[in-house]
Length: 349
Image (cartoon, rainbow, N blue to C red):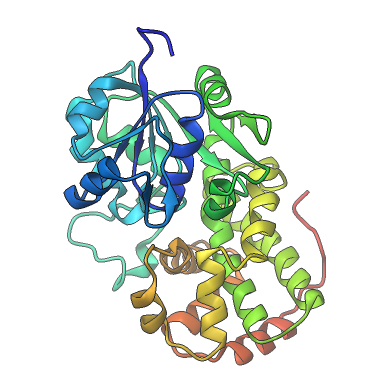
């Protein structure tokens, strides 16, 4: 690196945050933020964290002011449930010159004051749903915002297996910066101007991944899984359009590419939730034993309410809600799905 070059910031030391930090460190110094001081101290003293390697060019910190001061480009990669509070903590140190490219695959609910989304699901519409780029815009002065989405299973990235991602932004400069920082001989980076569409791909495929895990957990074969994935793709497009996404994003790498990866891999947290549900475990048992958040569970709650409110056809989401929160058996849900009257295969192109 040249003397005047700035480090690249990564916020979040979960598995995907660590994977991206290691990839970015192949070309740059990386400042990696972790919330817990003991995590930072461990990373400063060791060359691995939670069994995952740490590149020699990664330095850990738990000081957001330091990170924002030293890094012009920052990759926030934290769960959606804590994304807004993280942005509120980071915002005082951000300036319009910063570029933020997030890697979080979830949604934020912003209900009117005094309205609880759990007791008032019919009130949920697009006006109270935020993607992470919208949270960044609401909570900070940053203008140049992007997101990462694609078939990016963290374990495979850390093992340096070939993969690809999409950097989406309204700004060509952000896409080019993402490509410059991340593209290598084994990691391809594509660009997209459809920021919301690409974000929604990353969010909505988690619903279908839970259902796919359940199919696998029942011991069903490839035919059933292919049926679920293809119908799931259609459902993602219906829901995505209701939230303002473009169909094109869903048939690209961030859509169908990520969908296939998370629906067919036991490395996917959302797939694992569905698999274990079908094996007879309760949602509470599964979530309490998982180290990291399966975003799809929260997304099912939001999208079930949105689909009913906007009269969007989303049978997989609605049945999955019954399995997760109302005690319906996976086998029963599958029987309902097989009887659902789909008369036309594709009606959105």
